[in-house]
Image (cartoon, rainbow, N blue to C red; front, side, top):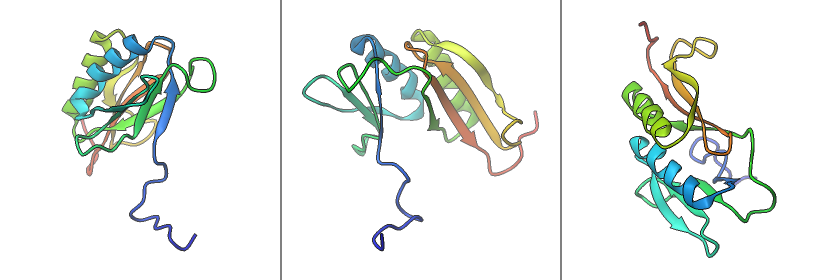
Length: 139
């Protein structure tokens, strides 16, 4: 474990979830993640789709033929760099067929610096965009 540097390496390499309808979920995630600057960066032989930054990192994957039935109740939080990005994610996800869990706002149950929005994806997974403000948010 001497090669592991907790300061520079992320705790995970990527996350994958199983979806019931790959084409519909690909369209949902393409729309919902676009405001966060995340794009499709690859597909595997079975059509599984990776999303990440334009630099090519594939941090989030969806697929219909991974091991098991569609994922349900998974929570994935995507980083936003502003409150406006959180709001745009929320609007895009709802327009793409997601359902609201929690509207954009300061989530005081976590912190007065935590601005997030939560949406159910097409399979009922809890998808979030969160902005961690350097200062307390007072609205």
